[in-house]
Length: 415
Ligand SMILES: [Fe+2]
Image 1 (tube, rainbow, N blue to C red):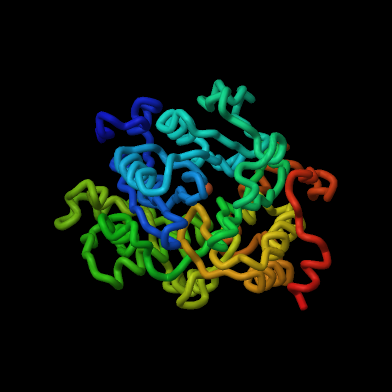
Image 2: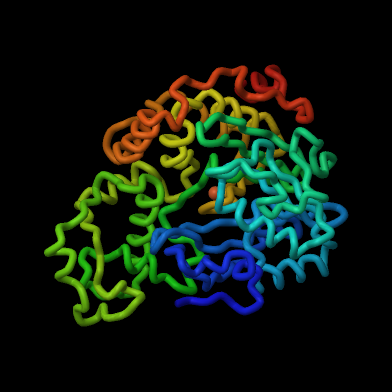
């Protein structure tokens, strides 16, 4: 069994963590990068199930008096060391923000991170929820005495940051809500899950251990995990298809005979290769499918298909309105999502073009690689677990604390 470092706050909080098939099984490495000199930093870890792992990011923003942490990561030794270095140069961690009501991967690390910075103020989006029981925030480990709710109880550092809400949107079992944060001084727009940027090359985070990429680059279970730049790229692109569609159309699952034929073959008798177990067969057009998602060499800005089909299938209007609200800020220069690439060069014009393109194409389709996600959505509808009615504009709460852009601003940008 894998174990976490003895000082890990993660292990203290979740002793069962190593029992889950969550890659990288407790050996979390953290990549620290300065995204905007002296202003914005990224702390990234890999997170996923088995070898389908994508980067998850906590963003550090330098404020006049100290630091703000956006989208929590578990406070491993590496994370605490990196933050201590930044604190020594720029001041203490003042604020921790949980910018989503539904993203468990961001919500679970909050209690431990808040304990690591006991004087920080914690802000969370409205409509936090837990399943199967709706528990009070303090029961979820949030520090009740120093936790405030964004938009409902004010906004942190409004003189330096601008906050733009998406939602709340009714998911049936709970609500989706995300708070984007624009750091005016650097022009960096921090978002969580609703927008991502994906490129054809694997993120730097895989450089230390490319095993997940090399695993998915193979055609059969008895292929050894050979390391070449081309194989890393191929593995990354297949991994993106997995993470985007769960079961992309070009992927077939072989029968038991083929599945077991690679077991314990020479060259794969190691845990890293799952001892030859490889339950995938990629059809030749898999790369064309990746190109539909990421057409060019630069980062493609998109709504993750798994969110489009399972979270926003009946909420397109709310999402487009949010993207256009983000675009109404002329100081926008960079997009920093909590997954995949960052920072991504961005502008109001690029976001407006994205919204227009999303509006012009079929939304949340059922065919091709979308079919598996569509099947899940249909099953949830059939069971009555998600609402059938499209979102009504009135269901989105107004945000009196936020100065949304005027129609005139949007018209000016469009012109
Ligand atoms: Fe997320």
